Amino acid sequence: MSVRECPPFMLDNALQFSHTLLKEILKTGDVVVDATMGNGHDTLFLSQCVGTTGKVYAFDIQESALVLTEKLLSAAQCPPNYQLFLAGHETVAQHLPPDTMLQGAIFNLGYLPQGDKTVVTQGSTTLVALKSLLACLAVGGRIVLVVYWGHPGGETEKEALLDFCQSLPQKIWHVACYNFINQKNQPPFTLCIERRR
Ligand SMILES: C[S@@+](CC[C@H](N)C(=O)[O-])C[C@H]1O[C@@H](n2cnc3c(N)ncnc32)[C@H](O)[C@@H]1O
Image (cartoon, rainbow, N blue to C red; front, side, top):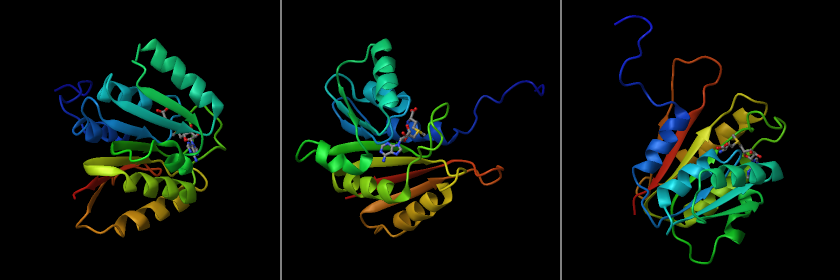
């Protein structure tokens, strides 16, 4: 093999792996949450996973995120299976219809690349959102978090999340961490919380 050729199989990066984990379990008609809408790439992915009969609830605190996401989903001709909220994910419980049963959710933490780098997710509000979402996760459902933590405040959020995830009782929750352990500069990693019963 020449040095220029790529091997046929390569490990997913943290973001790709978050989609792989959700793709495995999501099906048409499922209800899901994008807790950090940003440019809308995860919202689009979720909309395509759950189809016309499913529903995606997406959250962001920046109005530009809603504008860009709406544009992306319209351009991709997504069905009207999504609802975008200009609201912090910590308010998710107030926005989901009563008795919502979720099959999945995604968080993409940190700041929006090409956006305002001072607007970052915070451990305290991320944990409020995560607990609300766990409370309505169906058995077999998964919440995935792509944890970017190289920015100021990122390490505090990472530690708070790991502490919380490690304390979840294993009879109910399986928690996995996908991490590249030989990369420099605080590489992002993926956490997945799965409800077992
Ligand atoms: C890494 S970006 C998300 C990227 C996005 N998933 C995409 O596909 O483009 C993180 C996003 O989280 C948003 N954010 C920060 N705090 C938030 C909060 N409390 N609730 C919801 N979104 C928040 C930021 O505004 C930013 O757009």
